[in-house]
Length: 286
Image 1 (spheres, helix red, strand yellow):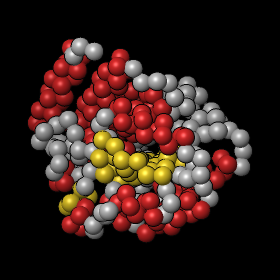
Image 2 (cartoon, rainbow, N blue to C red; image 1 turned 90 degrees about the vertical axis):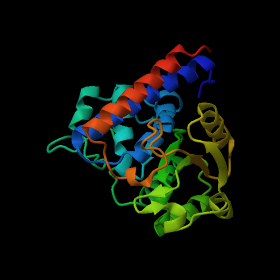
Image 3 (cartoon, rainbow, N blue to C red; image 1 turned 135 degrees about the vertical axis):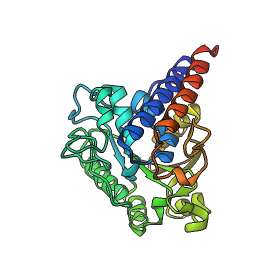
Image 4 (cartoon, rainbow, N blue to C red; image 1 turned 90 degrees about the horizontal axis):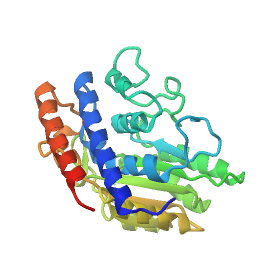
């Protein structure tokens, strides 16, 4: 992974903002989908696809590519938008989200979009899939990194903790998990529905390398991945504190936007707000 310059950080901020605009456009066009988590994870997806991942959009089946597994598949609009902006398919196709016959289903489906690593829908399965991939990679010498992205509410699922225990036992240092710690799930705040804290200590007790970051700070994302890649004996989890609905004031920190798309009027207002933010980023001096 190359060093992170101020110029690169600015470039990533601009890309993340454009990805958020695409998310709003596609959710509004679909009339269904999940807003808060997708917007909140845009910075992490941007960093991974435009700086950290070893991949090639022109060769999506390249066997030496890193693997990215989206476990909480309901936020797939951020995955689709990032991949489109990265060149895997045309950005115009994003407007087919959730439509009959579209490749862009409401949960990622590898059969429809072959350059996805897995299909996802039922929560709690992505980490187990990632552990399997990490074990398989250990059997060869391809030196891949397996990235798994999960939601915090998803950690209510017991299967995660079996996978967490097994990954530590196998010393899967080629596995990096991002937990979207946005503190919301569909029915309310996570600490009201099923309290997760003290979340870092829980992962530590399962013998993982635990790192906490601001999930909107590209420098912290960079340093966390760099630190995780230095670990030789443990899998790593990066607990990423994010703002659900990030970038649009009306949506931020409101669990009601977990599984609701903006209507046309709300989308127009949100896009205007994001475009204003984008202009500020562009005009900011290094």
